[in-house]
Image 1 (cartoon, rainbow, N blue to C red):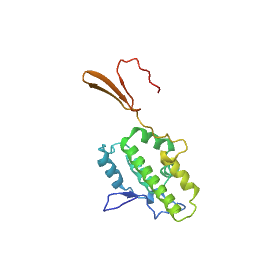
Image 2 (cartoon, rainbow, N blue to C red):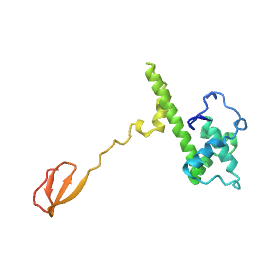
Image 3 (tube, rainbow, N blue to C red):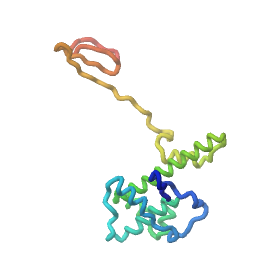
Image 4 (cartoon, rainbow, N blue to C red):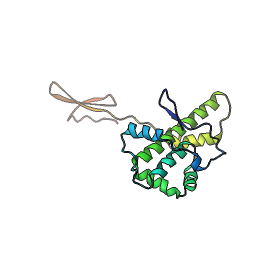
Length: 179
């Protein structure tokens, strides 16, 4: 992952082809993302006394370099469930992974729109990756709702109720509303 020095934004390393994976030891630990998230979210740093600290930092660098959880776990020699445990137990690790996932989703969206504007058919895997990362693209995404507004207003000592249906009635009246 590299950092844009002007804007402070990060992007997944485009120079690493998906088909060629390096050894995990060939990917250096990049602390810039971890430091950025730690300062942005005001999270405590990794506990250097924790024996998993270096593996967590290395996992974040590998994930930012485009590695999957399975590849990271097998490359570093631990189970995939350990990554999930770290994500649940360590707020800094979870925030870094969430940031990387959002960057991957943004890149998928950019790739999809680039294909659409060139009148090309985008790769279906890009579409499904985008659906997996951004809830608004899912088939079962919740529809946006409007909240009802209920106001109680007293005018010359008489209580009035105004609801989002723009109907006014006196409080306590026997008038029926068709709602």
